[in-house]
Length: 116
Length: 109
Image (spheres, one colour):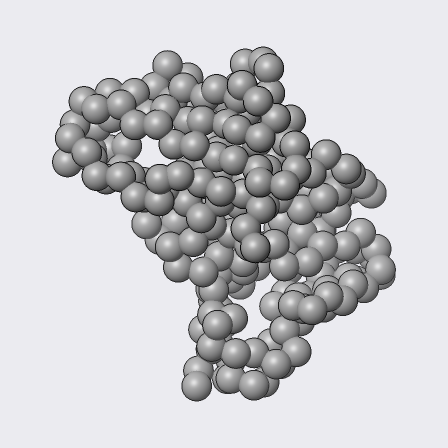
């Protein structure tokens, strides 16, 4: 069964709305989680590394004030897309892994975000 | 991040073996070779990973060249549900994964 749960699976909202996406590790603690974005026909692009109890680390070109990440517990990270616009429409995916060395990443099922 | 090179697409027939190649000539001694696959409209799914020795699990086998500069993911008997984009990624520990374009595998019935 799934070890990483992502919610919601699909969001359709108006331009200017803020949208929160949750990522939960179900049966393990994750001090680090990752957020990716994927446009149609493209590969996954890492947006940021979510660190439990500290600030997220953003990849170059990703606006930290636009994509707010909170990792308040060892099993939950949230990504908030603030004041979303149509160009933010994409497939957002999170991942997490067990702490032991070289454990694989487990991915959520993704959130399809559509901004009208 | 060390890069990998994969063919853009491959095609095979149902119930036949599939060999998906990956080149990683700049691999470092501590890089593990990971394979993930992504079905349409889903998050990626872990397939297999290894360091130096060949690896087998219920999904696939991973054959790693002796010099570690290339590897091959082997699906022993492809089914229609194996149609996906397969990503070969080098990773050290529980670190971020850098995805390339992957190989889009088509399985013909």
